[in-house]
View 1 (tube, one colour):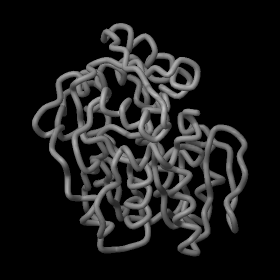
View 2: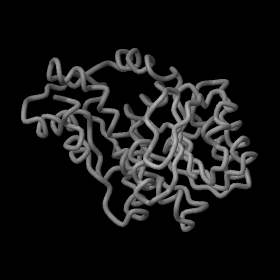
View 3: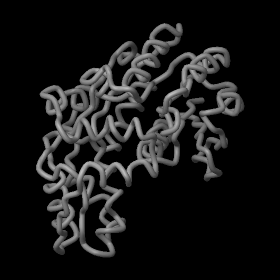
View 4: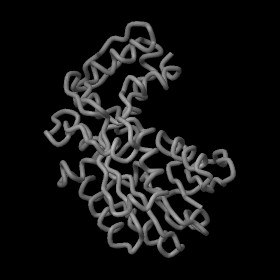
Length: 279
C-alpha cells in the first residue's frame, strides 16, 4: 500500500493514476471527503494533526508527503509526520520539497523545509527528495479573470523561470516510490525553458484561440491575493524568487528527463491539456 497525501491536488491526482496503472494499492489522503482510487481507499486527515493520519498509514509501505500550505507557516512541525510514518512501519518516503531549499536556503519557509529534509534523511527510512521550481498549475489563479475578462494579471511580467508541469512531478514521484534506483536521490525539477508571465498569457491565448491581455500587478497587489491561500511568509518567499530569480533558479534541470527518459513538458502543453478551465 502506498499513501499519497495532497491526493486531490494537481500532483496527487496524476500520481494516484500512475500508481494505479502500475497495479499498486493506493490510499489517498485529503482534508475533505473524496472518491477512493480504483482498488484503493480514501482517508480524511489533516496533516497539521498527524494523529489523524494513523488510519491511512496502517499497513503502508511507502508515503508521498506533500505539505499543505499551513504546514509551511512558522510554528508548524511536519517532522511529526515522519516519526509517525516510521512508527507505523512505512519503509519509504518521497518528500515534495522546493528548489528554494538549494537556491535560497535562508528564506523563512526554506529553512523549515531544509530541516524537514534533514529529518527525512536521518529517519532510517528509504527516501527520495523532489525539489520543483515554480508550477505551471499556478496559472489556475488566472482562470476566473481569463474566463470573465480575457485578462492575466500578475507581477513581474517580463521576468521568467522554467516552471514545471505538475504531471511531470507526479511521474517522477511515482518512479521514486516504485524503483529502488532513485533511493537517496535529490531531484531538481523544472520545465524545459524559461517562460515569463506575459509569455504564459500568450500561450493561453494560443490554445484558446482568442486574445488574452496581460495586466501587470505590483508586488503588494500580488501578495494581497496570494495570502488568501498561503501563509504570508510563503508568499514573500515566492515573490522574491519570481521577481528576481538567481542564476540557479533560471537553470533548466535535466532531472525530469534523467528519471523519465523524455523531455519535460512545456507550459504550452500544460495549457492545452487544461484549456477547458479557462473557457
